[in-house]
Length: 241
Image (cartoon, rainbow, N blue to C red; front, side):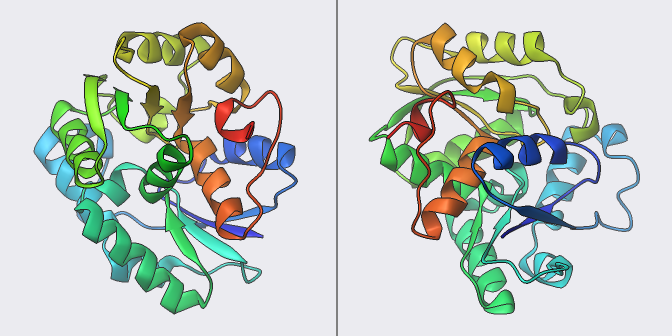
């Protein structure tokens, strides 16, 4: 069983469950509460939102929230921005604290991206970001720390994860297409509130290269951590080898 720490209830959990069913994987969720002074995320300015995201990813906050009905075999902090805004060392600290707390391997969506890119032997990416440009820049910095070159990026500056959970196929596809670049070996869509599970194969067919979504890399990485990297047809190149 995979335990997923998640930031906002009733956003993208159904997308995780849909993909997990295709991978014969059971998932359970625990929720990390936003800071008491945050209020509505969509009413925050860019700098305030960025700081709120950093606060949400505090290792002690994750550790306190990591309570599952059944003990997981592996746990992952299933939030992209909250795991990359503290940098590579911060992401590793989050995983280390969670692993010590639960006594099982721990990962995060941002760390999963690095493992997936290494698996595909990819070092040049395009970034289809839903965030404000400042938060996008934080992810670019995170990737740079890990030796990944971002050749192009776009920033949609969406107001909140609840808003992103309503995005349809057209909006997600348009964002990926806008981000793509001839020099990019893959396109990254780092947001776990988006519903991308039904789109994996179509996104890659349209762009002619791997498209790594946050939901997909999180689940793939969790299974790989357990020693059973999944191979499934129809879910994109990450799952095909």
